[in-house]
Every structure is written in C-alpha cells, then in structure tokens.
Length: 113
Image (cartoon, rainbow, N blue to C red):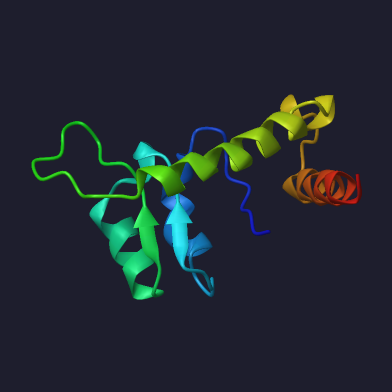
C-alpha cells in the first residue's frame, strides 16, 4: 500500500504520477477524475493498462474494460471500512506523520481482521 497525505485544499489527482512511480502491475483502476492524458501516459510508461472511464467531455473517448472496472468497488469498500475509525474520518491529527501512522495502523488492523 502506498499513500501520500496532502493538504485539504489540494486535489488528489496532483499526486497520481508520484504514486505510480516504482509500481508493478498489469492494470491501474481509477475513477473518471483520473482521466487525464499525463496520467494515462504514465500508466502506459510503467507497462500497465489504464482502466479509467473517459470523462464525458472527451472528444475521442478511450476504450476501457467495463468488467475489470467493477473491481474498483473493493477499494471503495476499503475506504468505507477505514472511515469507521472516527480519528481517520475526521482527521483529528494535526501532524501528517501522526495521521500517516494511524492510516498504517488501520491498514494492519483490517488486514489482520
């Protein structure tokens, strides 16, 4: 698992290319928000297939695997389970190092469970 804590006003999409560095996999599954040429190009650069539905305003929509995209719900369910931890969902921790440590704790707890 790899994550980056950003300020609340920053978009998640700004960190996509950084998160894709040194990643090994066949597919990258993401929602429509990650449908940008620079992200799709980075996915191709690492040798994976982008399973990202095209945005509705694309002039030439890209094809993607609809069935494989349904697997994204596993990630969404993980975030739902993580939000059951009040300290995570409300971000009580002021320091990012403490928040990152608690995210690791939650991940370990859910993995053991």
